[in-house]
Image (cartoon, rainbow, N blue to C red):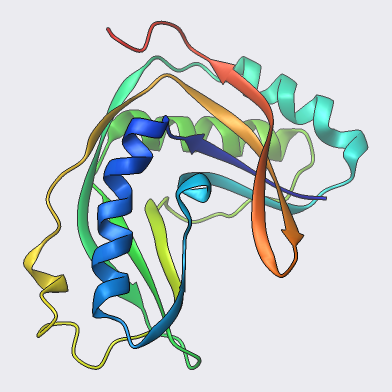
Length: 181
């Protein structure tokens, strides 16, 4: 099964984030856009993983020290692709998120999981295979505004392809406590 560890946003936050998706969608000639229910921030991508490893991953998630923190979005950007660009919403530098990423990667590596050895570059995918004739003219470089959200846990997510569309299913959630603090 295809797994990743993510910050799974509450519905109110996802509704705000959909404004960025819709802004890119409005400017695009074509593309595949992230639906509301799939908006998340991947912290660690695990890839194809045997179901028998889920308990070990959950145990690692449980041992990583973290406390609730605030996440703030940044500008809209894109990665160039031959078949259309991947548009994303950036995330402002967040020491707590960086620490969480390092802790997860260290724990996973010690348990024998392959993890990326690069610095975290957090972003939320807004659309794939997006073709925009002039992103600057469309106002995407003008900034989107900021969405701030309180993060109080991480989720182990499973990615499935259902009728040609990705579906992300929460397998496990590790909460760190009160989200209002």
